[in-house]
Every structure is written in structure tokens, then in C-alpha cells.
Image (cartoon, rainbow, N blue to C red; front, top):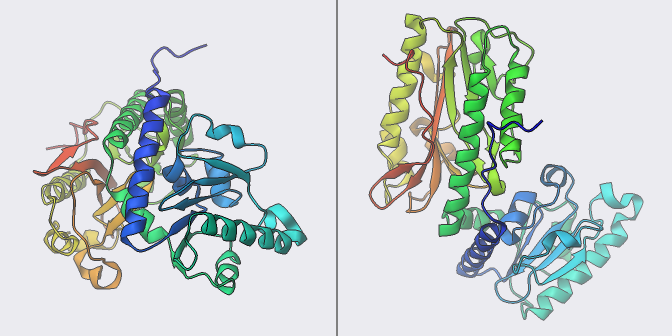
Length: 404
């Protein structure tokens, strides 16, 4: 029976294909700016970013069985999983489809060395056809032996993940349409789940409702299992399990949802199970998380450097530092993306140069849970950087019983 409370949030196929064309143009611009003649992408999300074609995204992330060759100018060649060439129909981003070579041992067993030779011949041909002999070749997340084989062939190989991360960080106009559709789908799924978040049900049961509504609404999958209740909310990153949700529990969710059109909707909310009142301890940690989130959102402006932002972030009280979230802000697009901005005390170890720019979409994170135990609260918003500040893309309501 069709659940009439769930609607499909996907936009027409031509919108998705227009976004793919815009992304390809942006990727080529960034490759050229970094003096890279062509990019060779194995990561399933990056293949989709570059040409728009989806195929078994989770499976082929684990088992790299397809890849795409993107020259700065000239035909894009998609090396597709056997028998799947039809998936690119309708996309003007792909000019040629070939069957991928079994350069990963999973696909060719003891014969993968022979497939490597054929793979190298393909790359030689494509580089020559694009007039790129002697120019740098960007490669990302390839099977282990691909890069040394290319270098032995004489190629000047550079890590292409850096350039595609930069390309992905600025969203095109049509991408923003797809992102808004993904947010609508995900927030609708969260509302469906919250209606069924009842004491006496297990975390797994309620989390299954979120998955059901997301996929029925046009979404694709959820990357993590971050949905916990009661004592399991602190520390964070305890995966969804068979615990029964009890009356008065805090229940924390991080969506990590690949929603419509492959775009990542990453928002967090913490709920109060049942119809009772919150305790003072619950209100305290919720209030701190809410304060951190709003404070850090207000710091984001186009032109603000990542270092300056980190230095000015909300000062976390001492007892909550140990269990804080990994970072206060990270980029967001088809998955978690560049930039990842660390806290000021570790910026010298893992920070990076750069600044917020118009049309970046980023997620602002907060987790507050005492190192001495007690409840934890996870809150997060996805925002669009504009010329004057930010637009909040996620607008799901907070829990009024916890805000005081």
C-alpha cells in the first residue's frame, strides 16, 4: 500500500542533467587553473560529480570497478561497469563509453596485471587524442598499482582529489536547486520519523522509519547510523542499536543522508522522547549546543579566512572539550566536502589556508556532552554562504521543551 504521507521530492531529469553539465564545466576550469591536462576519477561520488552518471554508488566506492577520464578540452570517456553503458543515456557530459579494465584484483584475479597493460594503453590513447602528451595527469583514489604504473610509463601524476574538492566547494545555480530538493526530502523524512519516535520502540525500529521515508521520498541512502538515545547519546558516534527508547530520553540524530539527486543533507537534531518535561541537566546541555551553533553560524561571511573563523569560534567550556565534535564546520555537497575547519587549538596540525566564498554550502556542527557522563546533544545546520552572510538551508524546528 502506498503511504500517502510521503511524496517524491525529486526534480525532473533535465534539471539533474543540466547540473551535470555545469559541474563538468566548473571541474574543467579548475583543472586548467592548476595546470592539469586531464583528471582520472575512480571515486563513485566524483565520477557522478564529473559526468552525472550514477551506478551502484556504495558498491563501486568499495570496489573501484569504473572510472572516468576528463580532459580540460575534448571528449569525456566513461569506463563503465560491464553491461552498464545504457546508464549514461541522456547525458551530454559523456561522449564515449568503454568497458572498464579490471585493474583491481577483485575484478580480474590473477589476470589484473594484463588488464593494467590494457588500461595504460587506453590512457596513452586518450591523452594523445586530447593533445595532452607531456602534460600533468590528475588521478584520485585509484587501485594501489595504478599510480606507480602510470609513473613508470612516464606520466607526471598529481593527486586529483585536491582539485576536484576545490571545484565541488562552489555550487552552480542548478546544483543549488538539487540541494534544496534534497533538504526538503530529508526534512520530510525526519518529520515522518519524529512522529514515530515513541517510548517502547527500539532505536533500530525508529531509524528504519527514517530510511523508509527518505528513500520513498526520492532520496538514496544514509551514510552513517548516528541515531542514539539516553546514555548512548554521550559520547557521540555510538551507532544505532537495539536499545529501547525510554520515556524522558534524549534522542540524538545526525542525518548524513544522500537525498535527492545524490546531494548530501547533513543536519542534526536532538529530541525528547515522550510527552514529559525536560530535566534541568538536559536543558543545560541543549542550551549550550544551541548557543554554540548560533554563535558559529553568525561568524560565517564570504571573505572570512578559515583561520580567522577558527580563532573566533564559540569557546567550549572545559568539561565539554574532550567529547566535542570533530570540527565546528565542514563543507557539504554530494557528501562531506572541503573545507574541514578545525578548532583553534589544533589548527596548526590539520588546518588549511582558504576562505569562505559565495555559493559554498557548509555544515555548522555542535555536540555537547560532559566528559563526566550524562546526556549529550547533537545539533547541526546546513547553510549557504551568500554575499551578505548565510542562508539557512535546513530549517527543521528545534525541541521547544529543551530550549529555555
